[in-house]
Amino acid sequence: MVADRLTGRFITLEGGEGVGKSTLQMALAERLRGMGIDVVTTREPGGTPLAERIRELALRPPENDGWSSMSEALLMNAARSDHLDKLIRPALTNGKWVISDRFSDSTLVYQSVKGGVAKDILLKIEAAVIADTRPDLTLVLDAPKSATDARRTSRGAQTDAFEARPSTFHEAVRSAFQTLAQSDPARCRLIDAGQTAEQVAEGAWQEIKALLSAQRASAP
Ligand SMILES: Nc1ncnc2c1ncn2[C@@H]1O[C@H](COP(=O)(O)OP(=O)(O)OP(=O)(O)O)[C@@H](O)[C@H]1O
Ligand SMILES: Cc1cn([C@H]2C[C@H](O)[C@@H](COP(=O)(O)O)O2)c(=O)[nH]c1=O
Image (cartoon, rainbow, N blue to C red):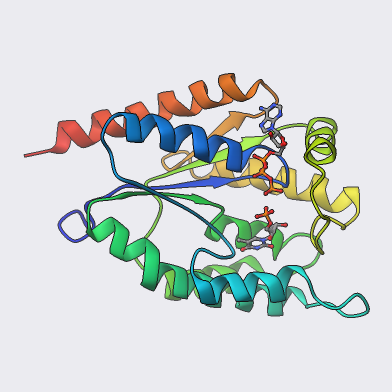
């Protein structure tokens, strides 16, 4: 990130469905706001009116039809480009912290698993779309399928086209997120999301505190 242009901090939350991203997002925003930090919470796909329209298109195709992985990758990136231009970059430029429930790692994982789009193609599209607006910290939430199945059932969420995919798909997604977190230790932290929501928030908070300390240490 270019410090003199983008002064806020950009945190992304990643992981499979029902792992606890939105719950953690709310907890972290509350703690940061308690410290007087201006926080914007958002999500992908979505976050702007146009990107939310793309979310509906991508997640809820007609019952007898569906998108290819390449179409999904392009839809997600079109939504992301609008999200970056209209919400994320302006917020960071104004010194706000942005916490996004999913970002580009979700495309790398979901649109490449199970014979999807080749990683090198996804990385080229990613580079063109996000340029230097890369997350300062990515918390990758990881929990066994038994835990996330139970949470999704208790939440009573409507099933979208992604949630409805077979369990082998969700297991491949979990494994791809684990690999991704391990491959970029400078940016990513794998968080044990099988713990209670309070324990998850506390573990994540320790990572944010490290980010805050680094920020103070580099301040003029
Ligand atoms: N650590 C936790 N332990 C138990 N239940 C949890 C925990 N974290 C979240 N939950 C519950 O699990 C459900 C799913 O959580 P949440 O909506 O935060 O997940 P998510 O990752 O944002 O899901 P999605 O990807 O589908 O949007 C909610 O009912 C939430 O209250
Ligand atoms: C950003 C992004 C998301 N997805 C998928 C992953 C999820 O199944 C849905 C989003 O639903 P959630 O309830 O907000 O988790 O979209 C994807 O396939 N690619 C992406 O880039």
